[in-house]
Image 1 (cartoon, one colour):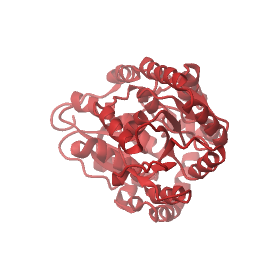
Image 2: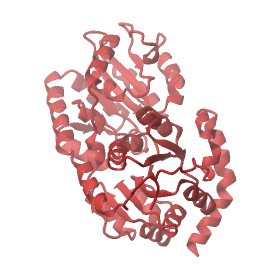
Image 3: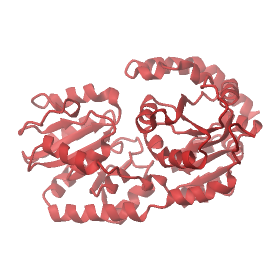
Image 4: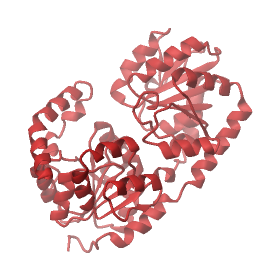
Length: 426
């Protein structure tokens, strides 16, 4: 009965979901592209078997990279379908994988749309990354005998409380999964508290990040644009509202003239908006996309390019990982650690809580109470090169010592995956 009510609610809400897409498309037109896929109109499967991986947005898509590579090696005759919910996730998939994978939107969780999606794709199995519990999707996969796994799973206390309000629906949805591999024991406990059974703990595959060989060269080129001899801190993956908080705190703090703040917004549709905000504080802001050097007296620069986050972080003396100064859950601090840079973040890191606390414990990161506190800490660290060096070394060790989750996940998955033979599905 509860699932029937859920299904009715989803169907009734579809017109509002369309309106929301149209609203979001004013700033990011990609939301209205391939609209039929939102109703299950994914690309039709050919003769090759299909392996389906769902990665909501940018972070999950990057985390999916080693799985895409491994499935490509292990199942050379299969096609990989990558589904997303956001245009930035889809764009990241294109950037990382090109034509090596097919791509589509995950359909809305209406039973008719999910059935259409499964009928067109005919996946041999599905992989959901992180926190994707869709009752109709999971029920239809079980009905269609499509094994589906939730991997690198995380569930914050706040999200667990939300699911607990519909506990019978969540319990049934989790029971339809073929297996769950969680990031931490706390994640596993929260999932089991909702009714999941036999949750494995395999770690966070984001630690298994491979830093490209050209990262150092790209970072050196960025430093040349930023200006020789300047101290640089990068505010990475800033979200709406955070730039204003940070700029206000920076202006009040009176940083030394040689300190440059490079702001890298999370979403590309906000590049012009953030450039205008930063430009209000003085001369027009140097933008990475134009390849122009930063004027010597400039306080701010804008990182308005895609696919260069590791280079930005490596080019910095200090990294402030945003998404954490408003209750947004934080962004991926592991990337900055992987290139040996000290990290600073705000109070709201519930999407990366285990990693944030572990980074603090290892001496790789620091938590600020708010934007003003973050600027005060940054000012102190930028005046203490030996401490920054120690924190950078601790960050590298922290990232290195937590690798191995991918191997554990692969070992857990291997006996659970169905056999895929020949040019088609058996």
